[in-house]
Image (tube, rainbow, N blue to C red; front, side, top):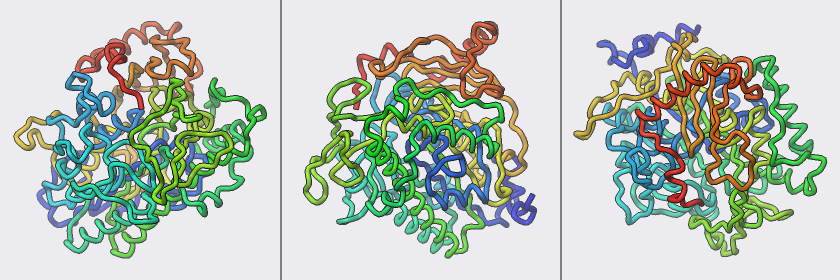
Length: 561
């Protein structure tokens, strides 16, 4: 234990959010939360992958990695959970940003929730956000702005309100509350880094601690990256998805992230063997652009870390790095929504690039992507690699959908440590508030505030002590899960993906011993019916408490993008 580093925050991290009476003696720490969009569990080198991200690797080497960090399976619910410490349904975002007629599915942050930024800004922190917001249905400038970042506690905001868009011409880009545009030739990921540095400089100039939420759109589609960054990825993926999945699995075992007995899940049923793939060079190119996007993200993080060093702030700063869900299988072959087989007509896709070229939306065989006049993805074939060794993807609640990297560095955290504690994205709010010596309010803006559902994980970060056993819960698009101890109960529902996958267990509970079978290959539901009954009852009680509704009630209301 690094006692010299730990001393300034011993009073803070006493595993209570009540600050000491002597807290004024200590400078409150800065806190940076970096979220990326659709990064898979094993993409980073520190998690067994090939992606070149030296700055993220450095954070991992100087901090703690989590092998069992869970998100909420998709962008909107994960963001709601991160910001509020509540389960998504409690925060009003049980699905996406559409009002489905129930308080738990309003498509807006609930008035009875409070964000990290609202709490910290009321306690002397400078609060700033860059990047993707995506927790309001009212993202157009003419809409009400009560759930825009500035109205939810951030003193500065530069970013996009909707879920995705061109990285050369971002849709829904605003600064503060006003629409804006990228400068000619600019690239969104780079600007997120530059704006983040500006906000850090302002906080330092004012001698204020700061909270920075750096919410990257990358590597969500469209896969956009600069040619020189794409060129650096050449050849990294020419072994193909079958070999790379095996290599990643072996590295995860060697790194100790997976139990030594963890098996690799079979190739996804939608993916052919690499040797049977007809367009290998094109497929490699798609993954190269994806990797290049993360190199851009890493460079933006490098800018922030360099500035922290220059301003002598790094030693007093906590950095959290995470992904909002598992890798995405969403593909748009020939400009169709592959899961539906219908035309892809998204309002956020620009008709022309900033230089006036028509944008060719979708994935077209042997057509390069990455430039401003493209709008492509890498599809389920590479998502299956990104989620190695797990089954399923973003949206589902098997491990491939909800498992992601979480890396934390900061004062008192031993370098290059690995935790196998199951933690959840709802835990970030209480942990951040504890680090900041700030109480969670019971009322805010004359509204009663729901108690957070997450748990402070400071004792894991600082003391490397286990958390008490608890149940963790999920529901998204009818998919549902509960994990308690080593047991996980999970069920899948086809939702809007019915045309591309078989559902042999549609709606049926599956039971797994995660300690022995993290990849969920041995369904024990028939051999442990009492365990299924008990966990299912506990899940149902939670679902009733937070306002989960039967998904079939909503299917006809859904508008798919």
